[in-house]
Image (cartoon, rainbow, N blue to C red):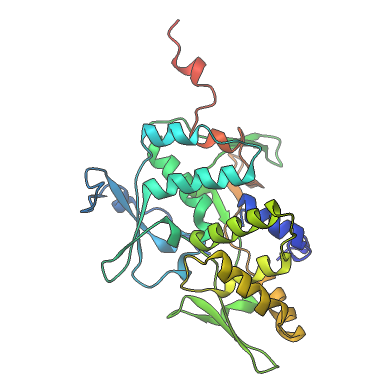
Length: 313
């Protein structure tokens, strides 16, 4: 983990929670066979084509139950129309519009046959899946790229696609505490306490975001340390009420110092998601650049030069 990440302030965590544009270990690529075999699920959207997607390809793939299958489809025009109204200057609106796309285009299927929803998706997988949906939607072209320069002086266009994403590495100090059965990290501390931590899902983060907004509207300052840590301690939950959060705040504020110091450090090591973009330059050198939206978040599904592209002279 870089010094920059280690020094991330609690204010930064609150901002990251609200905008979810923190782009931040799996190296598999989209299986060519699965992209050719649409899955038609027996639901209300059974007439739409879903493509099987291996969860091991997700930044947080290891934290889903064994046998979990993601089914992803291209966005339809009505969904693109809704997303086109995203406010690039409103972090909350960006996250909500991305959630709407996931709600429409992603299904989660568990090994027992039960179908989950976008609320089960790990928060740090949101951005990866949004761009996967974009790839499926614009297969005929309309790529979205970031231009950067190689050390040789050549300008390289790096497409925002799954093949060019670099994930944050999982901190090696965490690995031995990972439990495959629970999809979480299990720790015991010197003060005799036990803690289970796992990346929170979208459902939980939505609940905490609503809590933040209510506190702000009521002119109360939310406990930032609480918001940073507690969502990671709620494995298996996809929702929590406002009163439930208030109860958790009380428990958190009564926590002993050793427990807080440990949890604060442990969660600080749990940076997942997309870290940067990479591509090979023709000279043979690997070029890296920061993850970014070249035309703003609204440009993910809205073609930037559509007027010029589609006008008939």
